[in-house]
Length: 283
Image (cartoon, rainbow, N blue to C red; front, side, top):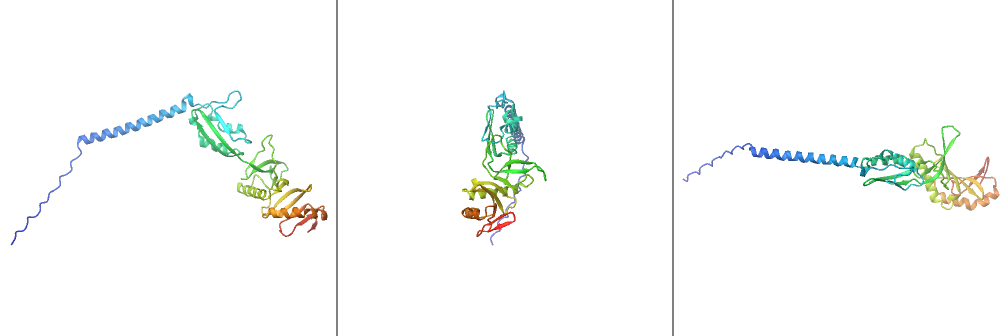
């Protein structure tokens, strides 16, 4: 019988020794170097920050002798007040442009009624440039100053429903928009302004004759138009503006002969025109 092979010997692993003093010192040197590097970066950043904030080369000069600062440029202004724009940056004149909070200044510009959008940028070493996109009015509005009050305020309104102050010495050939108040929500004004823009876009040949558009009832736009030297009120509803106006213009000579006193016409039914004057109606 063959002899059994001897059992394998088990070798116990040697316990790991603790890191030696060289490894400990190496780690200390590495972390010390990292800390020193971080401190150096922080110190350099602080010094750079102080340099940009205080060096005279970066100071935005203030206006002198009543003139605008040559280092403060504003582009895109036609009707917005340049003085209001400059006031937004009043705290920045006489100090480094590095300290000017551009996002905050842009928000200040957006609070000016005529400004639809704005971009503010630094131009090193010591200039600030502003580019304005102005709102474009689509109609005049007559706003009551107080509920039930007789006094009113005339302003302008753009396609977003923003109410705009009348700029001095400006001339606009626009219809008057009725049915708008400051108390309405921006969404309501925007929707009614959108109706007006849609109306004018659909009737380019007749828009120049319209003197007033009443949006008091969103389902029934009422326009005042000059036809054959007469101001007539036309109830247009909320669609088919061009076909309804074209049909009215084609038939008005005959209507004017038969009903010379009629000044209000209901065009909301596409197959007929209803004319009325006070209590007298006609078809």
